[in-house]
Length: 405
Image (cartoon, rainbow, N blue to C red; front, side, top):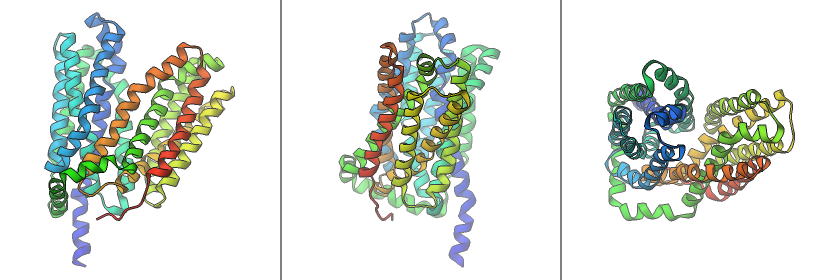
């Protein structure tokens, strides 16, 4: 009975910390969307080309991709919460300076600094969630974490455009940083639960003691296949989300309004799918089956949209269904990574596999843009479907059970 009371007493502290971590994830996605809705205003102010301004995003992705794995190692050795606080602080300061400084090169440099801050979120977040979420709820917690990121992306355009209307694009950047400061204050106010601190301390001690062997786990087949999973899903989703509207117009003469409704349906139901996938992940251990099934359905539906001209209602419904099925795979994806990760290396491994997002984000615009430029809009859908099906192979061979400590 004493043990049951103790576990119950931990719940509020754990819940508050988990909520703060999810808020930080929301903020990371919000920051990643800063430039997109304000692109035209920033470009006009600095009097640069689209390519020159896009350099800021390239620098962000390169820095994030190169440093995320080493930062994950530091997270495991020195603690996730303080690293998360540091990362959010660096990102918040960077984007505030980007908005204040009247220099294009300072703007680009601050996106590089923002990339440094961004390296912390995935390794630190997943480390904290893995240590402090109850085992029976870990799938749902991962789902809330992913959902929070989607919310950050969703609220960024309208809020940023509203702030731009009131204060200009520079005021929007400063306003975004103010929001970041609020989230930072919430995170600082939530200490790691003291009663479970020994578990986290043991994990960090294990990481310190086995530094060499911990790094070697990154070269094992399950981890490399999970990295490939992240790369492929980033290519699949990033390309389709970016080019869906123009590809539908070029291929099926779909009106822009209908095509945008299809994209909205895809993204909205993707978020709902994440929440449903969290419930499912908590009720099954067959995470590879869940991921493979969702990817297969999403791939088939995407191919159908590319092959057949559908009525508006059918198009919107199918894209929503595809988004829901793919979204439902996210919690199981995270559970699969966790399952093949040593208990003292959550930051390192999640940091490593999350580099796949940066790799995919760098590849997708070029490949899908090439298809559109060469008059092959149907290939946008068929390639996305093919990548989705190919990704199933990484799920099939990349997942193996292990006993968690």
